[in-house]
Length: 272
Image: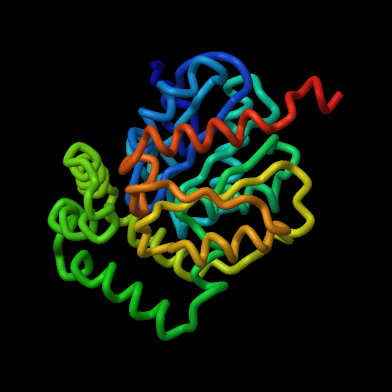
């Protein structure tokens, strides 16, 4: 595995493994690029598997102003250019799934296929103002009262992990939450909670796929099915024995289901 930094501003950190078409993984709001290491190892035999830290997360630089997904899309374009590629297969989990939808809206020419795991069309699209206010209050209050991400990491991780999640998965999730950049996380909560649909899902012409953890309580199966219907009824795969972080709770199951979808995606030669 190689660690690279794409010059900024802001500089974007990424890990990559393998060669071939780029398979790009986008983490959730409580994650970072290290959440995808089991996927990088699995898919490196057929792809250049890449996981980035979104601006303001992990080893990537922080940024001024609010989190704007337009800027994140531009960051992804810089990453692809740095790797010498024009297109990629996108896999986004939770917030990463919202970003992947935003990429399809802003720069669809960069996407060969897209997978949306444990995500939705956006909380602002699916919940009323009262739900959003309560969500933001619960997530922000401890941090605004002076606590650090490390102080809340175990509690938040328990709310997201599957009931029978392996200890290693829970610990990795807890550690990624503890490593959050506090100010960037607070800004991201607003962006994610208030996100409303911009993409015309029915107009998307690349292969798409939806995945969800069997025990995901934050974006459960019914929301996964709703998202799939917006894409014209694409397939929904349920990852068994997994919660909201389905790629970590059951990495083997997640990888096998994702691999089965990717093997159905036409190769570039088939498009020619």
